[in-house]
Image 1: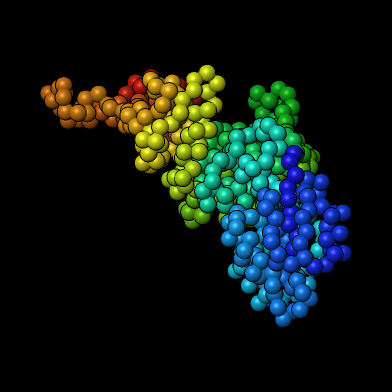
Image 2: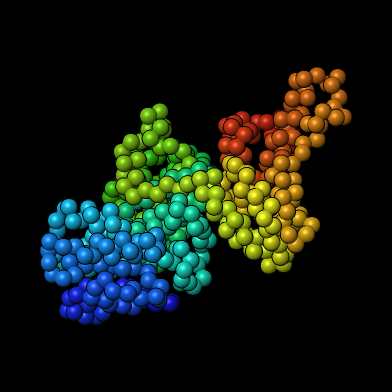
Length: 443
């Protein structure tokens, strides 16, 4: 771990000495007693006293905050003062401070530095070592906002709700939240993939003889996640009949295996994700309002890729470099073509497109023509040539629809993603696949 640099601007030598003794091991302290020349070394956080001359009628620290913020828009700035005047605190925030702490400083500072350290790790400026999860990459303001939110949730024990369209990286964020707490295990489940009659057994387990086929005791997902994190994806697919049981578990921290008499206490954090507006589902009577309130105390909303286009090049380069055998670079016109695409499948779609480009592009450089050919594949018969018009409009329309579905399945693989992109229900899509006899296997 490289050291992080904390700049402390304060004329109180005793405070500076105390900070040197109490700082986390990963931090180094550089001190200054006034608005003199700032150090040229990289600064990861700054702690600025508002009254550097002892005069309470002058807040020299405000100008220093403005200088530091102009120097680095992403620097973590902390203002501090023994004078808890509301007007002063609001001026500190307007001058660029992220937080305002009261003197004397307590344990809150170290907790804050721990979250700032995580923020820099997420930005990629430092390396903690090999992460098990993919990083949530990006240098756009939207990406930085998500990274800050992830860092702010370090150490939080209660439920966390992650919202975002399909393919925006919700499970990646869940794994990052898990990793930064150094806890184990991480248990993930997709609610849409569990049959309704098996929900309770899958989540909470069952005892032998609880029902036909229960020939032995089974540990549920919640119990398996004890001491770590339980990630429930597509929480909106959880039946109403089971939502009350999840709420009880969140409130009391106990489960009861199906068929068992006594409850089991389980300590795990629950992280849930959804690509649906839960407030709307509550209004429609499809999701419990009390469960939503319990889940949404700590919430992250992931932006779609179309709202952070400046990250497309960075993400594409990362995905292209993951192939250890083929070395492909993105030409400028190829990047332009990627930037022009709407990316309905978000980062997941970009990743799969890059994987295909690595294989299909004939040159070491990926050009516009390579990208356009992949993103806008021709569908046989849609050009108006070689069409047998005697088949009739209904039959021609059905054949065209079958080709569109087959092409979309070929590109995106995931049935839920294809259903969302084509704006049809999952059940209707399955029916069309069967009716058109489309050869397809879910990945």
